Image 1 (tube, rainbow, N blue to C red):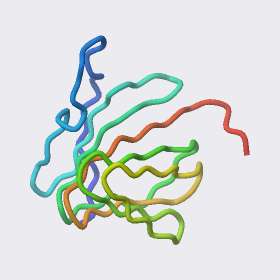
Image 2 (tube, rainbow, N blue to C red):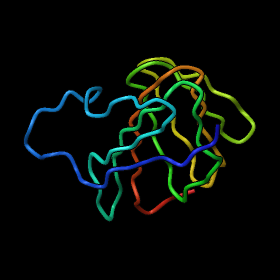
Image 3 (tube, one colour):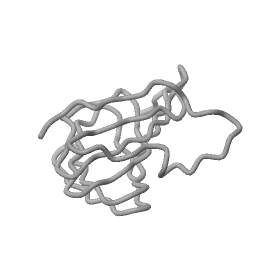
Image 4 (spheres, helix red, strand yellow):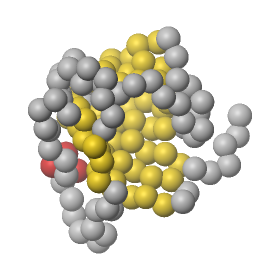
Length: 119
């Protein structure tokens, strides 16, 4: 089921310890996102996907680093499917079409650095 995600735009409290995997919960039939840091130069977001959820294909003008912090995910970059297990990470190249699919629940951290893209 293709869905857009529900998101929270407030940053996490600074100078406070956070257990990142607990910052966001799973909601049945939903994809959630919460902003950890949002700046003009980039952002860090945490997302949770319920089993069976996916996000529509999109592109970003910047490289995006994804790391799985709970469960396992499928990410398709271009025409190549990647299965990411807990602790795995991947860099989605700028301008590459990509989408996420949850065969099981998973949580991930997404980091985008909006600086002079070379290449």
